[in-house]
Picture 1 (cartoon, rainbow, N blue to C red):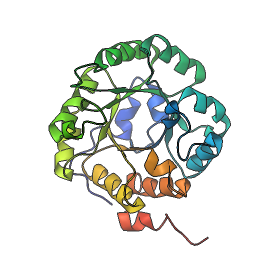
Picture 2 (cartoon, one colour):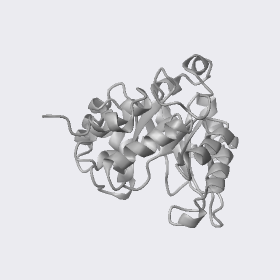
Picture 3 (cartoon, rainbow, N blue to C red):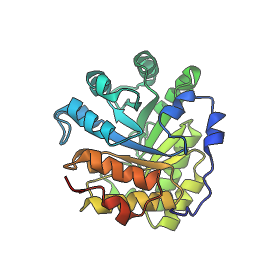
Length: 269
């Protein structure tokens, strides 16, 4: 099994003491999670998500722990989701704290997600995150923050130091767990994980050159001490998203090597 550079800070036993029981619907018994980000429809029809119900069904069949989705997709694919964990994406044109938590509770979601942009001179959304976390805490609703230094387009700002600071700022604002960009070496990303006050999940980011590259990122993140991954395009745009999920599950939960997990991508039909 893969040996982590850092001790896992919160074991399954420690998770039991968390006040938000919904966290157990996102993280498996080993305290790790494979999450499929399926919220790209917020911008319209997205690759791999044209048939939202079928996309959710295949990913759930692969053994994903939780799905990140808009309220529209979650409603449409409620039957396919079944008991799989659900994180509602709250990224919006208006502040979401005033409606997001109640909407999530009514629908039966297990967590909320909000993107923030520390260092952005126009809007960081950290204030919105603080307000959302305070309201969510009243309902026992976990919040996952996705902190992107400055913006998605400002790649020069996505340094190890900035990603670490952004993750820590999100935790300080009240986020229960954070999905962060995997940056630098395994050792450097281990520093990002160590300096954050809450569990860190590695986000998949842009489509990788090959599925094996996406698996390698997951393995590196786990080695660095991350508690799992949140993959969007690298799952939903794969010709067999169910097999991609199954391979990620083997790495994140089973401690499989990249080579062993990659064998699940194209098994004999």
